[in-house]
Image (cartoon, rainbow, N blue to C red; front, side, top):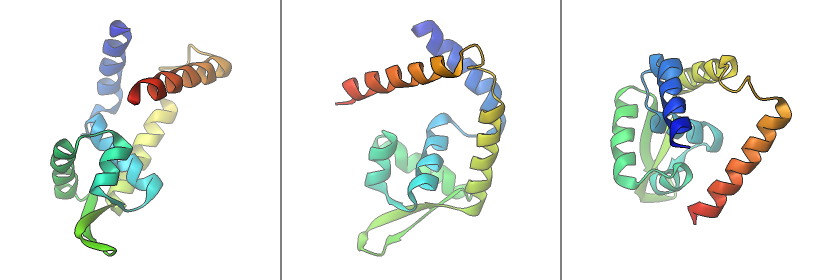
Length: 128
């Protein structure tokens, strides 16, 4: 398993490195695109990124105009985070890269579904 993680990490860096984003930052953009504006606490839960690390990621994403924080209209003490048009463009680029990525081509569609199901079960069993 460790070997596959290393291979996957090296592959991800080679394929997605030109985006200039680390995997967690991309996960934040995916969550924002899928769920609309989210409070920072909810975004932390959705991405499984601890709150302190998320603040640093959001600072970087905001500086690059990929995400935006604003007071939550329902609770002025909280901030809602949304993806910007530039963030959507970068995410679309990442999705095109993913669609062309041959990493899983050695597996049949049925094997991919089985792998996905097994990984989801492992995640669900160990996330708590």
